[in-house]
Image (tube, rainbow, N blue to C red; front, side):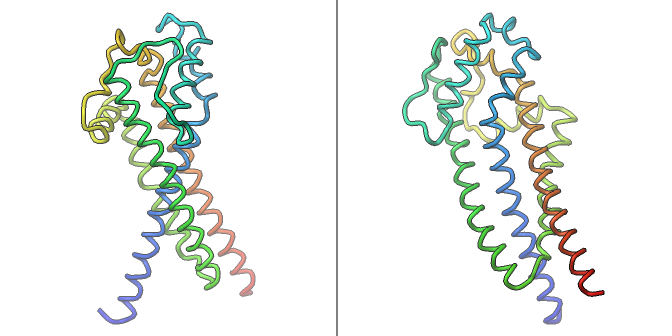
Length: 223
């Protein structure tokens, strides 16, 4: 392999690594946005018939859901306490693990965001935008895989996710000891997954569009 070929390979690998950073950034930001878009859950209460299924009124459902989301925030200090629902030790332990995962997305978003800022500024200084198209393609790969898996069989994908992420069976709730599970049906998590994938795809489209307009502008300037 000659020097030029080695440089091209290194150049492409660098762009792919930048694309991976964009992927982590967009996924983290998307998870944070969906987690904090409480209206997504509020609007699902009637659609998923949660009042009939849980035996609770809408206000109580929202109150307990808000308590869970507040707890999962990195800015919340203290134990998880549902306003009007019981919670077992294993259930509380599971939500503690869940909080760690959600908080990690905030850290990933912050770290990758800072790294990407420096990379973008460096690339702009050297008038190099080749990473944009590669990143757009890289970003679209993972959400496409998740989207296809979700469309084919969400239940199996949901179970696989929990088995991979959690090292115990605390996520297997008993409605009698942890009635909060009645307020969190799989269908709602499917809506969340669709929302996250959609936002990541939007991120990929934005990169494509930026790359397109830059190339178009450059081609006009060359005429």
